[in-house]
Image 1 (cartoon, chains in turn red, orange):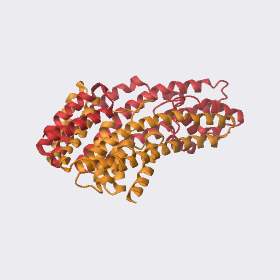
Image 2: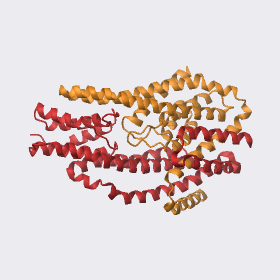
Image 3: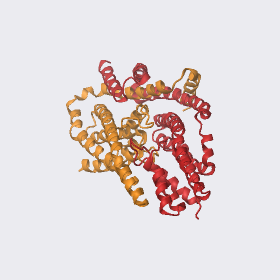
Length: 250
Length: 231
């Protein structure tokens, strides 16, 4: 009987970059998850019946944040291996575990990456671009991809070593206090962005006139975007239109 | 000839941008700041690419792609806007700001349309899932792998054709509008850059600034002023 090897986990890691390949409204990441788990089926399943059951389990519904899904992939690999080697009669715990992982992995991933890492790296990249030019693009990519790649790798290996216990590391309430601290860091960047955008407008040749236009447009933008009353497409059209009107009046 | 070569470059790169956005990798080279700068380098005007990237980056961050939410395809829209600006500015240099406004508005419209394309792509992806069910019945693991990779290819094609159509219409129809705007309007149109930057900053403030963290906001202001003084 074959055990999971390190190279199988590395194969899963590389496949995990394509977990969203067939994202759809019916089973969401279902096929993507199965695609990532195929090296496990090839390694541990001993007969056609085991392969068929394996595929049926993993082609079903699954959804999570794509980077955090690595934790589920690692843990599911461990559970599938245990199920075969410990000769589980009932493999429903694997399916239940997969369903239970969807909520925390989605919530933590969305809060961490879409509400913190992406805005911070984009704001930092824009600030550096406004001051130093192209280097800001590199800064953005580096700042974003360090946690991105780290979570993908860590997720697979930590998930595999912890199995069922990974769920304890991924509680939403346990991570809430960290998100509060992360918001403080994000706010520092917001302060810097507000000033440096004004400085860029001044230095770009618009001078004091540009800064005097920037401040009311900034306030207007806050009012427009607060509470997301309008779509961003509408907001952009409105702000561009008003800016051109201001330009024509000055 | 220049149009054809620009079109081929932007379509191929756009296909990869579409993958990075919705189907794979997510290294974020698809984000406007990176994608617009890269297309700027490819089409021979990196400074316009960087400018368009800065202007588009922050407003689109408001659209969070959490779960299955329907969002605009801001990355592809920004890429088309940047490509259009760069292509048109190679010919009409005296109306730079007018062209920038037209390219910004076109990019916004393409972003909105792109969102509809991505939505329909996600609906069509069910086709791959049903095929995978049949492959599972046949115990064909290789076919399951190929079907998932097929989904990635599907995203590439969506990005490729969306950009091919929107860039061509942009250059051949919308871009011609710039010629009808008198060049003395060019200076007033420069304020659109301030508007877009203000919208980006304003969006970030309304999304993330919290009353309890206001002290950190002022720390950021003081730190940035110190950095500017040192520079």
